[in-house]
Length: 370
Ligand code: NDP
Ligand code: GDR
Image (cartoon, rainbow, N blue to C red; front, side, top):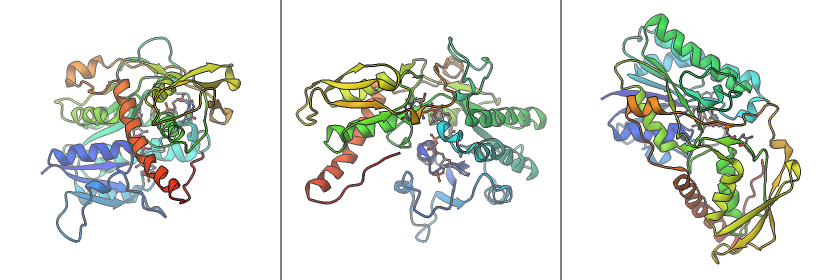
């Protein structure tokens, strides 16, 4: 039985990857952080009581900022594959926590590589590094591929740039099977609530169900190449199964604005929007509302701008060229953007129907502000 270690197993990608590897018969180990509340909601459905039997999913307390902890866990498990997905992954927040982001996203990657080297596992253990399209940042105007130069535009991206290059360096210096997946944005019903797509699908569901009036967003002109996380974890797995370790861009090759993502999400509840005004004064108003299940008043302003969500330096356009992954890995995404939006909206509508039920029977429901 192959053993895999996933850092960031409690996150969106960690959860889908754990599911995939368990289905392939792996023994899966994950690092979870100590938290004052339970933080394993995304993987609880796969987790069985370890007191009852030998379970194929095991969790270890740890943190990418703690070298000794990382070395001990890797020594104990002796994994065949390590997927380094753990990170402070929010670009906007990295401007508030730049040093911590560098520690975890940059030096954290070094800790994993160095632990494998120190433990003499360079021939046994294959390493996947979660690199990102944010590395391209300021590179605009054409589809970004494995040969496009980088221009990071946030403390997050600069930290990930270190993670990218230290992975390449350990591969070249110590002949390690260590690879970067340069993944473009990928979303799902498990996406963190403060990333723009999930923020939108949650808000639109709540507006449709009468639980919220409007949503405040930042830069709606941004263009992103959005795929589904389920498809992208397949690529991570494939990257570690090749004869030679290489880096790959994983993307859909289609780019869409945040504003159009908003439009598509509202369309799922039968609401058409008109956008008027410019910059911070832009407003999205209901032009028509056709689904009686989601009665939203025509003329109501449901999308407004809050400059708090603007970033000191923005990445205006991301568009990936996944040709190498499609030809060499034979990777092909199953979801396009409309299917992704539908999946997220269906899931969030179901989630908030529970709140609607609670509200209708007099219970207080929580609001979500960020
Ligand atoms: P999430 O934010 O959903 O998950 C991040 C994970 O990292 C969580 O499990 C989190 O734990 C864990 N983590 C955070 N800080 C630490 C730390 N100090 N030590 C150990 N673990 C830590 O991210 P995604 O699943 O979306 O992304 C996975 C990886 O891929 C990240 O590295 C991200 O930067 C990268 N990436 C993501 C893309 C995307 O579009 N989703 C695109 C390209 C790259 P906790 O649950 O306790 O917070
Ligand atoms: P991103 O994702 O920064 O691309 O990083 P995010 O969803 O946060 O932002 C995408 C774009 O939407 C604009 N935006 C807003 N963003 C947020 N979060 N909240 C808002 O209200 C809002 N309004 C507009 C942003 O300015 C941005 O242009 C994600 C993360 O998963 C990274 O970890 C990963 O590396 C990259 O994708 C690829």
